[in-house]
Length: 262
Image (cartoon, rainbow, N blue to C red):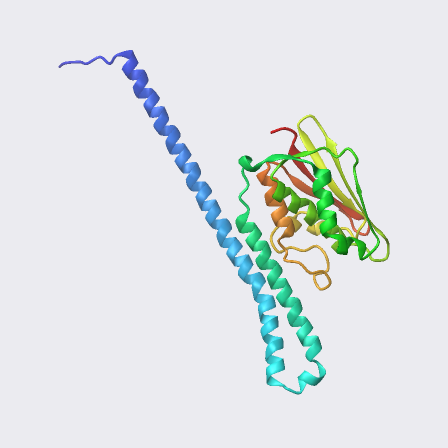
């Protein structure tokens, strides 16, 4: 029998090739798991969207049917029904707009830049002039607020949502104060938006970052239920985390972290 001895270099090359094949198989399995996870997330998203859209659509159909079936109603209760229809249409529009924003949310480091947050927040406050000056609202910005490194449009949405939420969930019996600042450590910048509003019940403090969860009185406060979900997605795309500390009747503080350097 003829025995063929393999050269050590050949064995090393074969072993290296086998290791590469194993690594590629592991990567393929990992990507497959990711795809299955994304598919599950999409199915859940579609279910939540269809469920959330069904309520205002049913309400609009019901009020419109009443107006069509009973002409006498037009002289008595039409204004109330039309206002309810308008409220549900506004809610549908908000949901559609936020879903559009969510679909366009494609954040990558190529779009990151150093952002002057003093200017960015000032732009938000100017754009929200009516909401801020319609009541007693004071916004205090930390004088030495450090710049952020990230996606400008995304961080604009984060601060805008947190500020407008503070106004939306305010205590109308007292002036509203909103504080915006930052705490620093060696690696991260921890920004915060603090208010003295109605606060968030403990049962909602984790779930408010999920889709279609609202911590306030849904009957009195309008919204799509996607705002904080989008905020969390933006912060996670920056490699950061977001959470809230709150006491009912005392107010809330939303914290989120961003990397100090690129």
